[in-house]
Figure 1 (tube, helix red, strand yellow):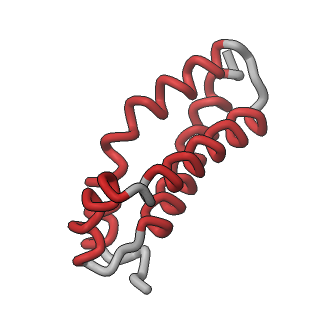
Figure 2 (cartoon, helix red, strand yellow; figure 1 turned 90 degrees about the horizontal axis):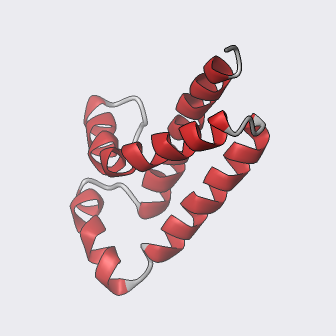
Amino acid sequence: MHSIFRLKTLQLWFHFYKRLLVLSLLISLMFGFMKMSLAVILVFKFLLFVILLIAYFEPSLKQKLIFYKNFGMSAVFLIFTSFVIDSFFTSILILTLHQF
């Protein structure tokens, strides 16, 4: 298993995550302005990441992950890492929005 703290691992993860970043921020902002709790937002996002993981097991989408597999990164690792870091960003954003 790759160490998450290697620079190459972080670069590859960001290459994967940047496609999800805008959608994730829009969802966070939408739920934040609706004054939903952080727990509800994180559960919703967790479900979205689970659906994303299931979708990547379909053969046509699975081929898009070959680039990452060549570097030893699995789909589960990419999506789990994306969820963890996205949860961190979401928490900061929602807690900031709830202060105003």
